[in-house]
Each structure stands twice: as C-alpha cells, then as structure tokens.
Length: 287
Image (cartoon, rainbow, N blue to C red; front, side, top):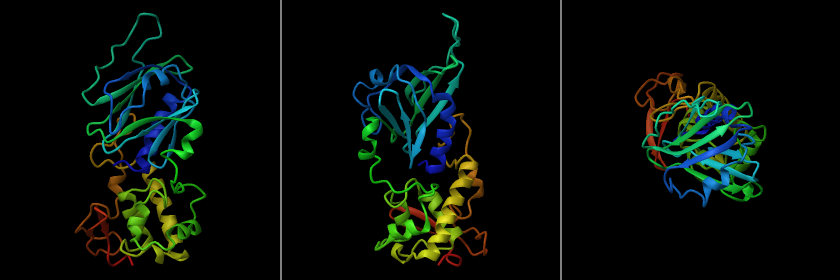
C-alpha cells in the first residue's frame, strides 16, 4: 500500500497539472471502488476549478471552488496518471488519446488557465482505493478527523510523540502504525526508522522516553525525506503520476532483507509478524 512518501510524490506530480485547472468533463466508468462514488459525483465536480492539490496522511485532497473537496485514497494498487496535450485547442482538431484500460475507473478532463487540456486518469486493479466528495467546511469532522500530526511538520516533536505514546501497552512498531498517533506512516518506513533509531520494534510504546523519542523522531523525518527525494518505493504497482517508479527500495536498510547482513553490524536481519504485518529488524542493533 502506498505510504506517505508515495502519496506525496503523486501529489507533487499532479499539482502542476491540476492547480487552477477547470474540470471540463468526467468519465466515471463504474459506480464504486472500495466504496460507492458520491451521489451525482460527475455533475458536482464538472465545471469546478481545482484550487490546489494537497495531502493529509495518506489521502490526496483537491479543494474545489464549489466549496467541496475531492478526497482520494490510493488503496493498494490505485494510480493517478496524466496525459498532456491530447486535445488541440483549435476547434474540431484532436489528438486521439489511448482508449481507457480495463482498470481505468475515473477520467477527468481538465483545462489549465493557459488553455492546455489534459486527462487525469485514476486506475485501480484491486479497487481498494476510493474517491469521496465532502464539504470543505466539514473536512475536519469527517474521515480526516482524529488523525495525528504530520510527521514532517514542526508540530511533530519528541515531546509530542512521548505524550501520544503515554500509557500505550502495544509494541512501538504497532503504535506508530496507528494513524491517530502520527499520520501517514506505514510498514516500510516504520521498520526503516526504528532501525535507524536503534529501537526494538518489540519495545512497549509507553517505555519510549524523551531520549529515544528524539532519536526516533529524527529518524522518521530523515527516512521520509529521503524516500520523497527518491520518488517513494516501488515494490509492486506504485508509480508516480508521470509513470516513473520510485527508487527508495534500493536504499532499504532493513525492510525485506530477512537473512541478509545488517548494514550497521552485519548480524542477520530478522523477520517477525506484528499486528498481521511483517516486521524486519536487527536484534543486535535495536534495543
């Protein structure tokens, strides 16, 4: 499932194409994905101007000048792609775009202030992603309510992390995957951050004091920043909006490296299952 770096990479790819553009046409090719499309979705977004492209945790947000915000979640295999310049501006003259694929479930035609028309396609083979349309004024009380701080924001500090972990008897690995503790973290980057912070994934969350929290917050910020710079991690289906794959998987310290030598101490990397997810760690480095 795409995590924060992958969603942020997609956001950065979509922003130049969509910010300030008018949605001129909508081709909704099925009634539902993980959840049903909003009622009258095509009619509600056609003609609206996309004011910006934003991200909160693992959600993409598209505030519209209609006072509604389109929210998208990529699920496991969701992907946005852009086809630029498929339509000439002269009346009646067209480039013929490729026909939609079998997994292309939503196609937005957008027109930029420059007059350039583009096609934004959302495809999702497994259909675990979803699209919602909510009142912009009610976002804070909807699906996004209760999310923890953004890990790359100044508000995510060691002191804040200690406070959010207080009294939690779950392992730190599981606690960090709780989106109410910190927003956007997923399995890959939690494994990587815990290794760099030299903290065992088995350690109870409530035992993380300020010293360990300082190491952990710094490691989380570093890992996420490096992953965004690398365009995220492509393990199976993920790709950026321009179709390029991420490269951070080539820099994994621990994730997916069971039995291989730890890059710090050369001890074999171990794997265990926590909360139904694979955890990769070094029992020598992480305490």
